[in-house]
Amino acid sequence: GENVEQHPSTLSVQEGDSAVIKCTYSDSASNYFPWYKQELGKRPQLIIDIRSNVGEKKDQRIAVTLNKTAKHFSLHITETQPEDSAVYFCAAQKSVWNKLVFGAGTILRVKS
Amino acid sequence: DGGITQSPKYLFRKEGQNVTLSCEQNLNHDAMYWYRQDPGQGLRLIYYSQIVNDFQKGDIAEGYSVSREKKESFPLTVTSAQKNPTAFYLCASSSREVNTEAFFGQGTRLTVV
Image (cartoon, rainbow over all chains, first blue to last red; front, top):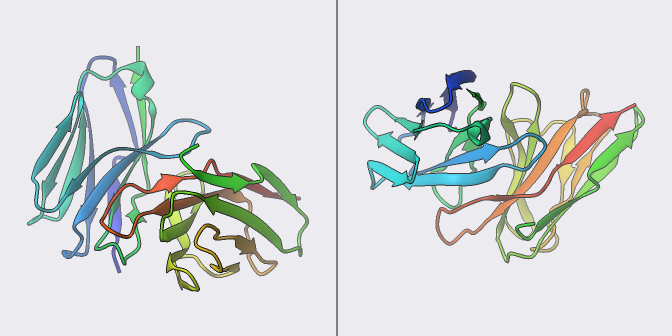
């Protein structure tokens, strides 16, 4: 079955710097890759997603890139702010009939 | 609340007892999921259901059971066979028409006392 690995497990950056979180997946048939943000004590919420027919997607300070050949995708956050501090999860899904599999999460700390 | 509600928010259970966690959604979603969250281990899939009256085991199904008698409801029972049940449990739902966002409930924190 699908396996998603996420790195790093913790990431500390200075306010204003960029942050990059990387994930790899095992099933080449996976075609949907969402990213979720979970603030302390709250539920995970979708921040951006990408499908396999697209190589990159941006939404303001957040971008996701996908390399299907290497089976990895990355989250890029530019100009980080203290409110970006949270746990970030990547996920992969093969089709709507298959399960959504999550990575282990990355704790991002933005120091001001 | 995103249309998906978990109850209760906090739950205490004595060892040897079964306990059922509720998950209800009014989003008309076909797919529903149960995840367990432990510190440093991300979201591990317990069970998922793509359609009423059908469900599949996830990666850590042992000691858990589910039912899907209604589209809106996907309750999770933590049985006495689950050796380490203390955790944060998250329910989610998504549309099955196309790969799209999964909406999460606010979670239930279960503590065995």
